[in-house]
Image (cartoon, rainbow, N blue to C red; front, side, top):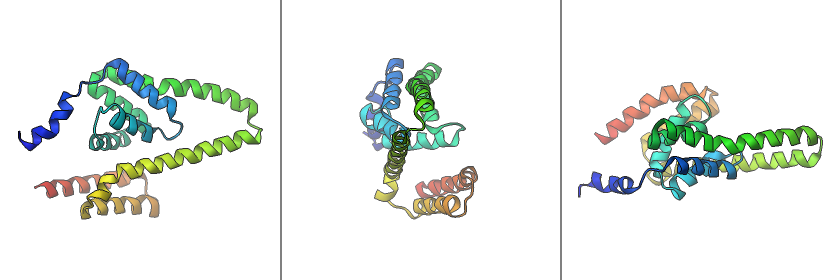
Amino acid sequence: MPPETASVAPQAERPAPSLRELFVGFLSVAVVAFGGVLPIARRAVVERYKWVDSDEFTELVGLAQFLPGPNIVNLSIVIGSRFRGVPGAIAAFCGLTLAPAVFVILAGTLFARYSDVPAVADLIAGLAAGAAGMVIAMAGRMGEMLWRRPSVQGLGIAAAAFVGIAVLGLPLLWVMLGLAPVSIALAWWAIR
């Protein structure tokens, strides 16, 4: 069996998720996640349901970040569309947004009534800190390939992105538009 076929075979044997599975899968992500949805989505999509592998997830997140709108919403639409077309995109989107919509309406109602209670402010601060930690953990997992198999090109692009955004304060869009062609050219040159 050629090496290309061996790596594709497990993906081909895995059945595409149904509309119900897409809805319930993204609903389960939305129900357990608060603020830091992307790390939970990665765990669900890659590790639990095995709809895509880690590298595919990273590529899909890159696409979702490039598209306008919230990354996790874009990701759900891309994954749903990938497996079931427009109905899959709708099922994944509805699964992802149903629970948060209900929660936000209830939380807004409660917050309007109890916003002056110090314990409520402390609760919100604690949830924000937990969400920040989850985002940092996800970034570490997504960058795992870069740390396991470091390349001068990959580290250079990561460093240039960090300097552009964190040090120079350039907008993310302009940094991505500037570094994307360089990154693609370096990857193409490396596989030649």
